[in-house]
Length: 305
Image 1: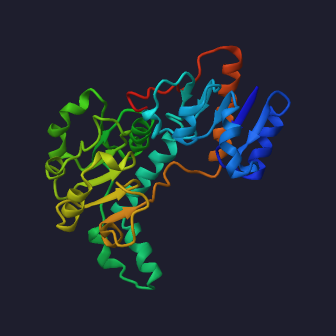
Image 2 (image 1 turned 90 degrees about the horizontal axis):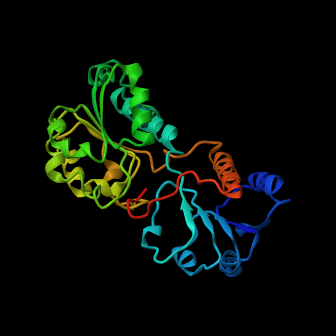
């Protein structure tokens, strides 16, 4: 049985895969194959680890299982008449993304983002900054999305005595009732037909001037043009954005220059051992596959997660 490894791993990480699987499977390592031959090798595989091009996935007739290296399902929601199983990394990034969300909140509230900029300019302001700082303690937080990220955000905020409300796909219909009294709005939403444009201009304008917006889900959930206008006019306190409508954002994009915005450049899902943990997840799932057991994280393409 052949396994095609499409994900780009470091040499040391590939060695881990080979040490654990080479005796049982024929391993096809994409990075070790000439680019023009990779599609052909994939089409000969029974199992694949990695987000191969949609066109490849649409062509295969031999593949039994595709393990994605992401939680997101783009662009595989466009697949038609496929017969293989698809699993993703739903929940895998919960802790790291939640930590970035909370770190971003603290960076904005405690002035760390601004202080870091002052340090690069060798500019000391000191005491006058104290009155511009805020406490996370006792804040009223609204989290959109009840998946692993949303739940981890709530867990991390317990130590700050926050009043945290988490809205899931069913209770998000009550969103408007919460927005006017929310101190911090945290979006952790996947991209689905229901979430695209959920945070419209009308809803963003319902936030109070002291509100902080955090998006660690998908850029498509928010009307970005409206958000920029609101931030420019200081209608809310600021925004922590791990995701944007277009990535990377162009150099001329207004978000780069906004004093009340912290951009974390879609890094929230990362940590030093991320790839090794992905390999472990795949191998654990492979053992389930070998035993004929139900795989972990079988994706629902229609729902988007």
